[in-house]
Length: 509
Image (cartoon, rainbow, N blue to C red):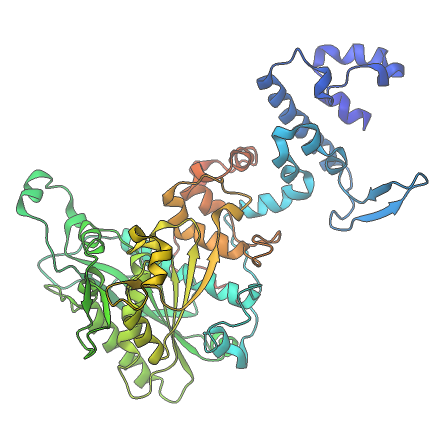
């Protein structure tokens, strides 16, 4: 330990320290901030970091006991002595330097885990055989008993479906423009799981257009002002091992969030319109979402027509097999997922179980629409970030309490399904004052779900998901302690590029 202290001293003081070693206890120690009144606050913080760095280097050279095996024994004077912990924990640095409370997270027992989390190599939570319980994980009992604490199998399935939505975002941004003169060509999508194959591309079309003066004023907006856009895909599990693991063949419909100006314009059309296929005037949904769902493009069918046609084809192709239909989306995609679920739940005589996994979705319809989905036995799991404003609109302007009191009003919005609520503030890696974009970011959602354990323990210590993409997408919202450590681990920001290979490794293998 004396060697470790010596390493923290400035070089010019080494001789002095060595000559006075016998009277060490009476000297002012650099580990005692009360004895260094002449040192400025900035240099004190810098010396603190230098101290931690030197101690880490020293401890990395020595053999450490298992940090998780901590044994407490009583000493002769009745005090409790802790054995098996690292030396940094024994120093109780958060007490010595209150401004460096997070420093304990950078101790050697955390360095290996942090380096793994900052790696671009994905590590997945256990992916167990769902077998006969697949209906339970698909929501047949509204996920009762699986959310608090969060079941590890359900956590893995939720993250997996979120990654399908990330593939939809990447598929769009890799080639966002669409021709106005001809039908679009088939689009390649790099799926996060190679046990699935894409069978259909999906498109949405806005019923509104920008005035001509906008094109004259800003002619270079390009795809941002196109009325029809690629929004997602239909994929089906085609791997025998994965089908056996899941207990059925799964059909996935993945939808991205808002990207174009026309989609933003539709988002703000918040009037409640009656569902065209419904004879009940109390069943209403938001006008903009309904427009994107039902409007045909110049060279593409509507989203409703595309999904119904493809689902009917797949049901007929795999007749006799156990099937499930899982619809997943983020933001606008989460809203459209509910309309798609409503559409396909009655598109055939015997439709497989339909479940929706939505991330950061807004309200879509009123209580009549909620009851409509419940009667059709559509199961919905809404993953909601407590700080995400998008999940509170439309209807936030009258207040949450007033919103609940007016649930029976046909002109009041209502949420659908079962809620899994996470919280940005519970992540040890994100700042407590993250911006609005981070609260709604899909990667931040997956980071929070992967870390969530229960309402009493909001973030588990053995979270598996890599922090690299979160640091790349939301670097300004990650605590500086971790961004600095990423740099010290030679994980420079310019290395955080995420080229999607033609086929990503399957987590099931």
